Image (cartoon, rainbow, N blue to C red; front, side):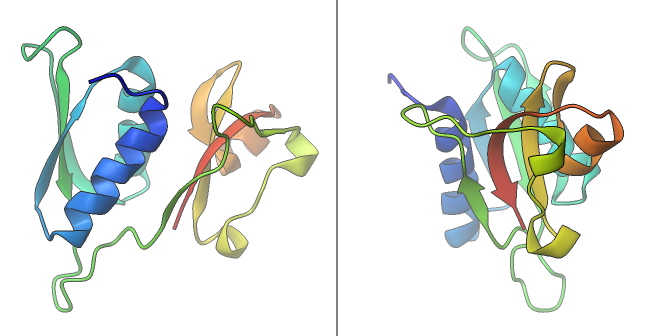
Length: 134
């Protein structure tokens, strides 16, 4: 299967798995997706993840989704792709977006790697705004 926008595919797979109530989702791996997964884990949006380098050419990422223990509502309320392949969205340090007044995160691809908007501000770098997560 040829995917033109792998990051949008990544976000959609997580979104669909949550809607279906799945606990684990498998996603074809890439360096960018591994970086996104680590950020989601570090920010507390997913339970855990495993990079399976045996499967396929690039390997896969197994992500254990996180749900509220009482209400069974997914922790990730919204995943939104910002910079699309047809229209890239870049932001300087001063223009970096705030998601839900700092309650959500924006994931930025910078010259120093993929990081959250908070880390990008700390490192004083701008870059391509990949997606919003809240």
